[in-house]
Image (cartoon, rainbow, N blue to C red; front, side, top):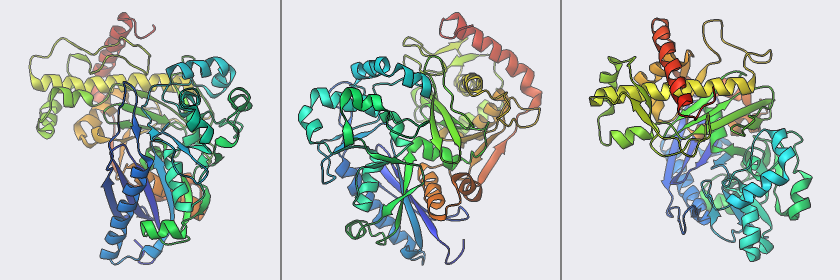
Length: 501
C-alpha cells in the first residue's frame, strides 16, 4: 500500500448492522469497522417488516467514528480518503419529507404486504415487464409506494421523495436528498434500457417529482457537507459517489468483469448474478437484470436453497470435522434437495416444493456430504437456466476454453469458506470457481467509489483492486459420476412436477 496513496471508502448497510471499509487503490484493506443497528426490524403484522432510517444513520456515524479511530491508530490520516459510496438492501423504501427527513419507518426489502399492488403493476405494465424481462413482486419498492398511496394517504401526500436505503444515507452525507442510482431504482420501475422513469408510472399514479433523480452506478453526486462531516468524522468536501444495491456491490467485490462469468453468493440461500453484453429475461419472470455503466448487464436470480439446511440439521456442529468426513464420501449415491422451507423461486417457481433425501442417509456424515453435493447439483441446474436465458453459447459471451461447461464462477458468502464444498461445486458444475480474498459488499462499494473518483471505469477498478484468494478447478476424474447423478437429480425434480422436461 502506498504510504500516501488515496483510500476509497465503502459503506454497507445490512439488516442488523453497518460495515465500512477503507481500501487502497491496489485493493489492500487499510481499515475495517462496523456497528450494530440499535433498532431491530419490527414485524407489526405477518409480512410487515419495518426499520427506522434514523437508526441506520446513527449506526453509520458510529461505524465511521470507529473507522477514523482505526485509521489514525495505524498512522493513516483520514484526509487520504478520496471518495465514499454506500450500498443498501434492494427494494427497501423510505418516504422523505421536503427536508429529507423520514416520515415513517422504512418498508424493508423483505416486506411483502404489497401483493395486490404487485399484481396490478404486472397487469398495467405488461409490455414494460416483457421489455425488462421481469415481473413485479410484493417486495419491489414501486409496489410498496402504491400500498402507501392506498393505505397511508397522508404519508403519501406529505412525501417529497421516495428513495432507497443507500439513497437516504448518501443524501444525509451530501445534504441533497432525492438522488438514486439505477441499481437501487430497478425495483421502483426505472427503465434501465431508456434510462428514464417510464411514463406509465406517472400516467396511472401521478407520482410526479416524488421519484428520485437517477444517475449511473459509480457517479459523483455531491460532497460530504459540513454538518455530515461533524456527525461522521469524514473530511468535509469528500466526494460522494453513488453505490448500488448490496447484491450488486457483492458482485463487484467478487471479481467478475467479463461476459459469461457469474458471481454466486452461497449463504442461507443461493443468489446469482451473471455478466452479459445484452439484457435478458425469462418467460416466467424468474430473472431480472441490473446494469453497470461499462455496458455490462447483470442477469440474476435467487433461490430458496442454499446453506440453511446446515443450521437446520447440524446446529452447533464442528463444520471443519464434517467437511473432512464429507471429503471422503464424495461423490455419494444420495440425491438431496436440501430445501428447508416450503416453496422455491429459482430455477423454477413452486409454492409447494419441499426438500428430499433419496435414500435417507444412515449417518450424519452421509447426510452432510449429500447436502453439499445436493446444493452443487441444484447450482448446476441454475446455471443451465441462466446460460439459456443469457445465450451463453452465443457470440457475445466468452467461454473459457473447451473443457469447462461455461464461464467461471466467483463465489462469495459463508458457504464459500469451505474448501470441500468449493471443490464439490467445481466438480459438479464443471466450472472453475474462484474465491475472492474479500467478497464483502462494503469492499465492492469501495471499488465503486474508486471508479467514480478516478474515472477509470468499474471493470478496470475491479481488475485493479480485487484479489483472488483461491481457485478450484474441476476434477475430470469425477465428471462421469457427477453427470449421472445430475441426470437422476433433474429427472427426480421433473417427476415431482416442479421442473419441466
